[in-house]
Image (tube, rainbow, N blue to C red):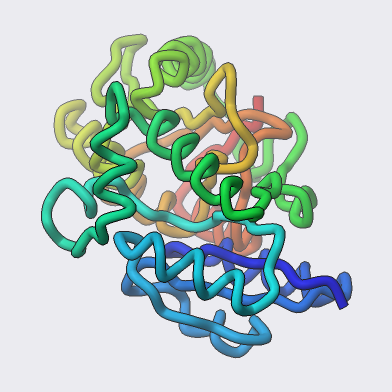
Amino acid sequence: MKIIGLLAGIGRLPVEFARAARGMGFTVIAVCVVPGTDEELDRVANKTHHISVGQLQAIITTLKEEGVTEVTMIGKVTKELMFSGAVALDSRIQKLLASLTDNSDDTIMLAFVRELAMEGLGILDQTALIRSLMPGAGVLTDRKPTQEEQADLDFGFTMAKEVGRLDIGQTVVVKNCAVMAVEAIEGTDACIRRGGELGRGGVRVVKVAKPNQDMRFDVPTVGPNTLESMLAAGATALAMEAGKTLLVDRQTVLKIANNHGITILVM
């Protein structure tokens, strides 16, 4: 069977990917690169290693020893970890980071991809085996957006695309066609909660792919945690980009949304 490597971050996506890959006949070698990865991954993958994201050489050595030649990187790994001193950095990743012209998401990830490629490890499209998790356009919930919500979502979509073009983030929180919060290093959930606090509830959330989105990494994702953050923020509507956003645990997401009157629109 063909062997595939999985560099796993936090969330359900690594589990979904591993399950899909196993179902297609792949042997899955997972490397959990941050603490708190889903415990189910240990049962779904053929083999699981736990190696910190800061130990680049150990990650590469392990993948090669396992016979891996193709890798996917999926799950939440915030670059904040490497800048806060929360993880130890080996000499290889220190050298890589020191060579960069800036520390934007795409700059770091593309450098990481090049480093793996130098070792004969190709990076797969994150969505290659899980395209079924990317919904098409339409309203997913029982409730459709109101006229006011639709105006905010349209405005937010334009703003989010511009923020993505600048490689800052993929999510914005808006209210009355004004931006309340923009996602940066803190991540989607913290952005939503901050936007809700600043907007004092009644906010809308928009998540999109970057205009030049590299599908090998950082594909936008919505899941139950997104909805929980929206509830905490008093958000009433969510928009995501059709065919370019992964929807994880769809049944749970829609149950939460419908139970709390939240509308979800795929644009």
